[in-house]
Image 1: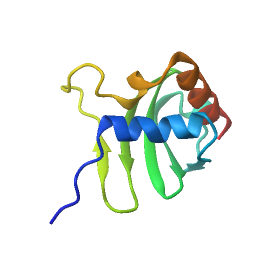
Image 2: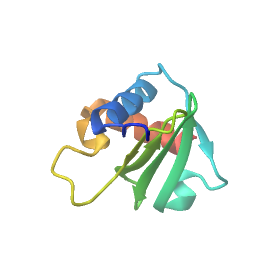
Image 3: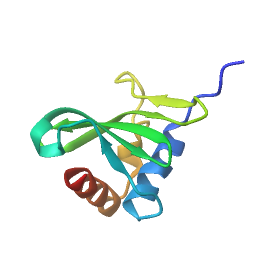
Length: 104
């Protein structure tokens, strides 16, 4: 039986945990946020692998989130409003998460 997908709310909670310092993330890959400028950046936190989309040096959306158990959230542009975990973050949480991405 395939694992159930991660919901947008579950992925949001992971982003929030990173923003408030409950989880620590590290960059996967060679390029920094500013070097990517427009494209995807992948980080890892507690075995979770998250990919965010950098749109001209601004956090646009969470592209995917994979758990160690094989559960996954994958962005779909056809999803309804508020199904992107980034949209669920408060203004402060989003700004903090984006700063952490820049510093990773």
